[in-house]
Structure formats: C-alpha cells, structure tokens
Image (tube, rainbow, N blue to C red; front, top):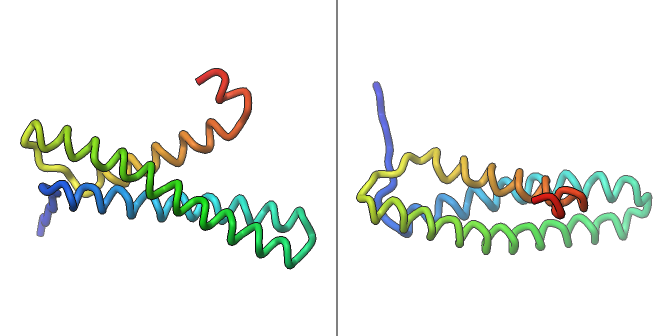
Length: 111
C-alpha cells in the first residue's frame, strides 16, 4: 500500500504552498500574539492584538506563499518534474523560520 501523490499543475502547486504557508503563519503569529496579549494584561486590547496579528499573518502568508508557490511551479513545470506534496510544506516551514529569524533586529542586519 504505497500510495504516492504528486502535484503537476501550477494551480495545485500554488494552492498547496499558500494553504500550508497560511496555516503555519497563523499558528506562529497566534502563539506570539497570545504571549503578547498575556503580557499586556488588558483583555480588550489583548483580543484586538490577537485579531490584528491573525489578519496580518494571513495577508502576509498569502503574498509570500503566492510568490514561492508560483516560483516552485515555474521551476518544476519547466523541468517537467512531478512535485511531491511535501515540498510546499517544507517551503512553508522555511518561510516561517525566515520570518522568525529576521524578527530579531541583529539577524536582519546579518542576513
């Protein structure tokens, strides 16, 4: 029972990349905003902060996931390669790690 699935079409590659990026960005930004809201100690502004972080993360993830998704689709379609369904997840993790690494002021200067 070795079922292997591949992505062949640009729309599928783009959708997988955008969805995974949105899921991971929302999870990481929500965790950060919950910690910030806890430190704020004001319930009303804490909820506004969480909602703002969530909206910003979804918008940011859509644009960055779209760019990476179309680039991946172009590379894989040019080479006529099938793409494993794990590749968009890996690139979403790379994007989240990049955002976390560049969130520190010193790392943004180094990178």
